[in-house]
Length: 189
Length: 247
Image (cartoon, rainbow over the protein chains, first blue to last red):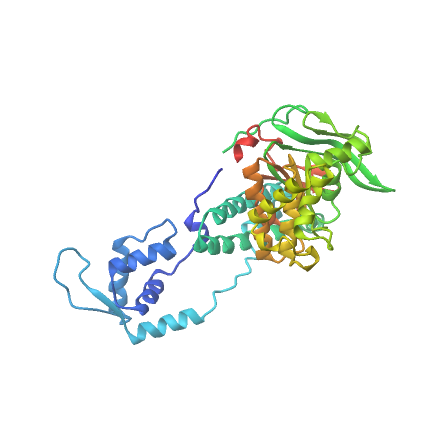
């Protein structure tokens, strides 16, 4: 059976690292190592958070008064401080969680631009859409295979990507059906 | 990535079932205008297309339910469209399995009765048929529902019984026409997981008609039907030579 690993960047496009670490800290004060471990487990999806980024982010959060570093504990290595979230940090997490993600309509997508340009240039927009449909379905196959092999976290992330790809496919199908009208519009004298 | 070969000759190895330039009309209304597609042994092929494109008619022609007006249908090296009704019926009963959008079970009969029915029609002994039915019910997570009338089952349970009924004869090809069309999203996924999982375990070829991209994503590849003709994705000839190895 062929299986595909999930390309993490495709479905976890933009995890907000500072706010995510802040959210993890709201559970309980933690060392950088613990934060990195939990981040990688839940949000990394194959792309680990570098230690350097963990500590530089914690330093910035401490500078901005959102976390407070504890005393340096005895021992070797850099991970000798326990960080705790402050009231300001807790407010920021609360506001972030309450705020919806911008539902961007993406009206001027690359897909749209390619279709219009193909029609303007007298090339086969239908063939381009067929190629794009196939590429989308191929990606959906990979994600479906991942769901079948993976756990609930993989399933939820793959579902998110699948629904977006499905929306694109609907647009591709509708556009295929409207190519004639679009061609008349873009090629009108 | 699998190697892609040109379409093999009808009946050649790798190609289990094939439609070639099939034309089919209903009265004055053309449904298929020269449709060609094939599926390899153990391959799962999604047949997609908008409503009225002819995808279900193509499935019915491949399965020997409809006789094409023109063109050829081949199965396992034999020409199917030239066979008489009796031979085609026998083939459908022994080599093909069917799952439709609405399970089309006999509602007055129990789940076990419905699953055993194809075996009994094929002259299996009653005890053996019901043994097989019990085994399939367990495999599909329905062990406790053997005696339940199918008219009393939920949509997802009924579709799983329909799947068991389609597979109990160990068909070489399973024809599934919108098998999740009447189910909610999650129940549909459960049915597709079972369908694909069992097909891969058994090496069953699946011709899966669907307009739903999420369902089509369970297949190894897709073909599109538009205005009665089949288009394969750009750059792809047709059957993968190693279709069986996909499993």
